[in-house]
Length: 338
Image 1: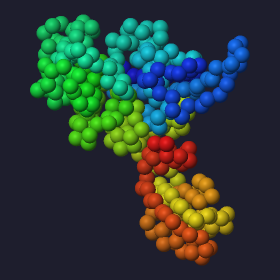
Image 2 (image 1 turned 60 degrees about the horizontal axis):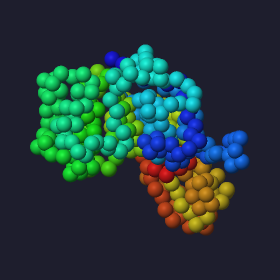
Image 3 (image 1 turned 135 degrees about the horizontal axis):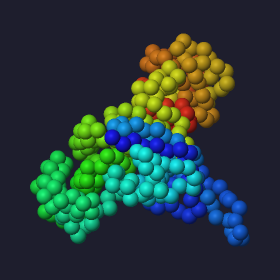
Image 4 (image 1 turned 90 degrees about the horizontal axis):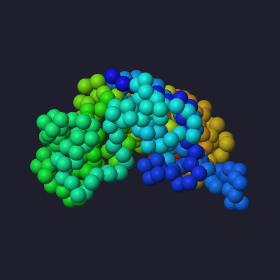
């Protein structure tokens, strides 16, 4: 089995990064330059260090532009880091690219299939690239098409496939040479619920065969359902690392109540902090406050009473049970999907 390691990965773009790397949410600043007009720099990664043991399903969870795809790009030899190191097993990604490529399978955010080929041809040709015999690649292509429920479309050109079918075929192609490490960049984006559940089942099966899987996602349900451990990243940095259970338990009190007032006051916030079971209260703006507590629904009448006593209008209460979304909110003050 093969694991993954990174040490102090840093990536700074001085021109728009490739589409697969994504940039929304990165930090922009101006750097010194010899030209009259300095180029803006885009900090995509700001010192990412990870240790992923062999046979683990590991997730990178974060909003668009957090640095997830850039991390995968470096680990799969498509993006060169500004500094730092990365290994697949004991192989340095940039010093042993050929060896690394034989060990990994990659599914990018956007399908990059050859529309002039059939589904079967795409898989068979991919097997040939990796030296599989004619008999072996034919047998494996049949098995994968059947498992991904594409056998009835095996000899049709993929240009007529739906987005979900293309995604399934992309993952089947990545598995064609039986890689030791599988990278899935936003694997279930845009998939219908039934296809998403099929994909999760296949990912678990592949992992049970001893394979290491790294997936990126901004879907909290997916991270919770699939990942044995995950790193939550934002602006190119790891802000939390652990199992989904550990991370959810690290939120103060677990429950989050997002409150909207006509306009709150320091006095009201202090009274809220004094309520039984309340761990933390943070003002989000002049009208909003996030309240972390050991209990949820039973607090709502008490909050409403305090607002009434203080002659403050309470417009909305949104209650969330312990979740990865709450963890991200606690660390960053914003939604995972912002």
